Length: 278
Image (cartoon, rainbow, N blue to C red; front, side, top):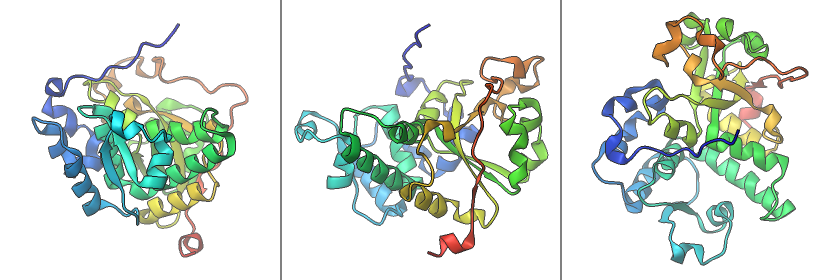
């Protein structure tokens, strides 16, 4: 059966309470851009990016119109060569993408660098396995930080009741989830709709440095070379993220799929101090 095309709600149709959901927690300081009556102009986004960015380079949001597209550049190539992030006016998907740029510019730049390298290798009309992995993570990615690497075992087995049943570990921050993909945020604009994230997992070390470590791993090609590296995480299962969690048969739903025979996930990426200091 073909998937129906996702359509985001109109700006005035999104209840303010939606943005209080934990999926939007990492972007709380930008909620004014989501709640305002009017869509923010690129100059407003630029000012926010300048204030927040750790990208180390000049980047600008540019309205995606016929004049911009006349350069004939691939979306990723335009960011890399000209520093212009094509942004559609009045579009939730692109506004939420801007929020991710504000908070995770180093990761976005690392993804962009790898995409441009892949485009140079296979051409603008082909997609490599690495490009698929990079795009999946960019659109639907999340980062899971583990205090103990072995905490991943029940997740590896798709033992969803036991994995999500570690409520104390989630509550105390021994397991932390950072939603990165702007498509995940867009789906959550509809109350009660939680998609499945495609995850990279980091463990051990100083987890306050996870962004710089992961950005380096992406740039170096140590991760995101194949979509099979990414672990599925049904976000509705996270403690407190869905009102349906206490209903009988919750983990029998379609999103909580069993492990496919032969499916093996890579070990979590270790956060090592010596790698951070290079």
